[in-house]
Image (tube, rainbow, N blue to C red):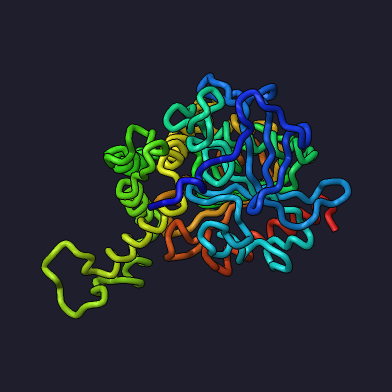
Length: 402
C-alpha cells in the first residue's frame, strides 16, 4: 500500500503562529519550505482565498550580490522541485539534471542561482489536496479550491518576493512548466528578463482536455477514491490513477519512439498466452509506468493539476487576443518545439511566436527535429541543449552577468 504520509504536508496547526521567521522558513530533510500565515492569504482566481499556505522548493548555486542571476525552473504536470538532485521518494536523479547543475554545459549552477518549487496543488510539500485544512484539521481532499496556472504563478511570485529577488534573470519550463513561463511573462512583465517556454501551448486543445478527462474519470471511477476522501480511509485509488498515468504517458511519446522501442515484441515469452496478461512489451511498459507513478503521486493532486491545465487559455484572459497578453513586454523570449510532439505540436508554438511578433517582442523560435515525442524536452537532445545554452548565454551577456 502507498505510504500516505509522504503526501501529508506539514502545516501550522489551526490558530498556531510560527516563531521561525516572518514567513516560517524552514529546512526539511528533502526541501526548503516557506510558510505564509493566515494573515497573508493567496487570492485565487476561483474567488476563494487560501490561507495559510506553503511552498516547498529547492535551490542550486549561489545568488549573487545584486540578485541578478536567478533562474526559476517550472516543472511539468508530474514533476516536482527536485530538478537537479536525487528525488527523495523515487531515489532517481533529478528530472533535468542532465541540463542543470554544477559544471553543466547548459545551465551551470556555478554561475546561476536556480530555483525550482513544487507547484501549488502539488504533493511534494506545497499546499495541495492532501494538506490539512485548518478549518477541520483533516486533509482538504476535494474541499481544496480549484486552482489555475495563474494561481500557481502568483504563489511562486510570493516565493520570489520572500527570497528578495526583484527580477528573475530567466524563467524556464516545458509542457505545463512552459505554461507557467508564459504566465510569468504576461503577469509579471517587469520581473522576467528572459523567458524560455518549451513544448507548450497558450491554451489546451479539445484533444488535450479529452485525454485529461479520461484520466480524471479513471481516478474517480476507482471505488477507493472514496469521493476524494481516501486519506481518512487509509486507501489509495491505485488502479484508477495507474490507468490515468498509462493513458497520459502514451501522449508523451511518438509513434516512432514506441515502434522503435517495442514494436510488436512479446514480453518474456515466445508465444501469445491467449489471455489478458501483458503479452506485449509495450503493455508491460505502460503497466510499470502506472504502478510506479502511484507510489509517488497523489490522485487528488492529479485531478486538480490537470483541471488547471485545461482551464489555461491566455487569449481568453486578454480579450481573446493572445498578443494582448504580452503588450509592452521587454522580456527576451526563446520558444522551442519538437517535430514529433503531437501533444503540443509546433503550430501551438508558432501561435505564441506570432503573438509575440505582433507586439514587437524580442523573440527567437527553434523547432527541434526529434522523433522522441513530447518527452524530448526531458531527454538528451544535443540540438535542444545547444539552443538553451545559446539563448541563456546571449541573455546573460545582454544582462551583463559575469
